[in-house]
Image (tube, rainbow, N blue to C red; front, side):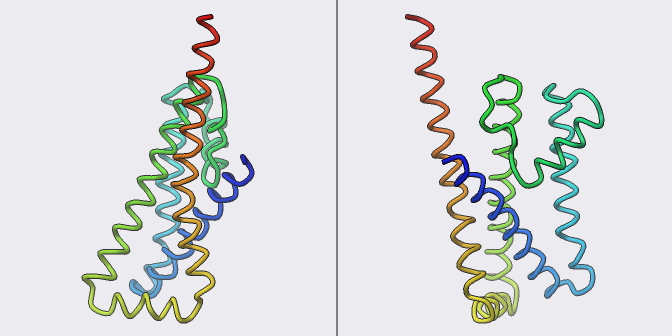
Length: 165
């Protein structure tokens, strides 16, 4: 189960970046190639700052290492330590916000920008398998997050009941 969650997380992030790069390059020309690195850099800085502020990593190199690893996968999501769990939960919120922001921006672009819907349909016709995989994994990742969050909550409640007994 953990492997399935990790697979959906990594694949969704990679495909989201790939789609973002594809459409930004088409719409912005040469400047579009800098959008995905800028988003990744913002994610990196937020994760490193969050690791330092929550106390998960106290040294600079540890913060940077954790931020690099966390670009693809939330390594602390299954930890029992309270600090790491708080960090992981905030990181999950950040990831979900990123997906919602990308989906909202894409929806606005395809609906309101002239030629946006034609660009989307052209991409779907050009590579329907990639579009289908991206749609599947980008929809399955939030479902997996909700699923695992509920499992963690139930496990915590069971631990509290056992500790009270």
